[in-house]
Image 1 (cartoon, protein in one colour):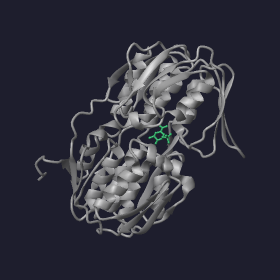
Image 2: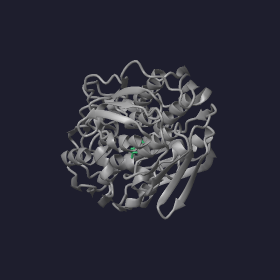
Image 3: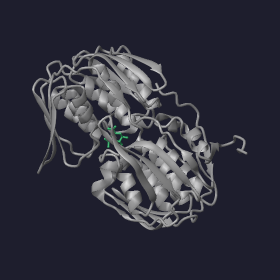
Length: 454
Ligand code: S3P
């Protein structure tokens, strides 16, 4: 259960010359999936590099509640003794997924085709987020859901005793919905088919294949068609979780906008379904190099070297790239504020239903920092002030959203006056070592009220 207590205000002050190596933690998406699929395999899965952020720890706790034995062996090293597909036990307590949309949606999928009932809840942010996008397809398998108005948590799922396989075209670009349907399909007889119009992150498909499921993907006129054969026996795996490109985004962007910086961020996953931010930054003129490109654990990786880039230019981000950088728009908007000209972001309506309404949250904070922003239902435009041109000097609301908090702290390093956030506590959900890692590079980031660093 996440232990988010009283607000922890933080502040970032103008800094010069970030330098060094930023070893960012494990990938959050892959960490959730490793625990869940480990719990559905027969035997012991060993995981290294697991992200030990609150979101993932909540999923570990949930897997215990469904009957798996989940043990931490050392830092990032975990063992999961799974119960097999269809082997989940009924939890005795409410499952608290904290801040994590990925956790709750994937776990709902994983239990929805077993004859058990579970009740899910989360923090104030998660309890505002839409769940019908998952419970609608789960109903096609025969599961029932009863939640609050608007399909909100807390919510009880009664799993299908006699599930049927489904064919489902995902109506929104969402890897969480796709994954929930695939995980439900595991315990349905026959073939479950998921169709997505736009490619979203494919970690579930890759990992299911690794665990021995029969799964295929075909590009068709309808979109990507993913076919999974139900009721496989999943064999335990050894999983090395790669570092998270979504966390790497913060030291990379900080280096690009902070004068005199050069930062190396090693072994970052460049799976094309996740790497859209880095392509966008290079189009903006970022001095960002991919060094030693190679494959690790079936995923393309490289070491990223980012240097201060004083001549960044605003661009139009192609809407078809949105899914591959959906979590990176907040920090991109901080970079865009430090670029010359307009950065136009379209086709990003999904940002309104993340841990916060990320368009509204970033627009409000950027405007408080002296940056002009225009917004519509599924688009927004940041009018850049150029390198060194952001006034700053505001305290921004993070709305229980880790990426909003980190994005404003990155902006504070490059603004004329410090930028604060009202609550840096949520950063622990995805990047618990953010503050120490950034300070290790020389960033002036601290808890508001704490003594200034020497
Ligand atoms: C995730 C999918 C994305 C992303 C989230 C992680 C995943 O959400 O925003 O941080 O691990 O599947 P959506 O699938 O809702 O777009």
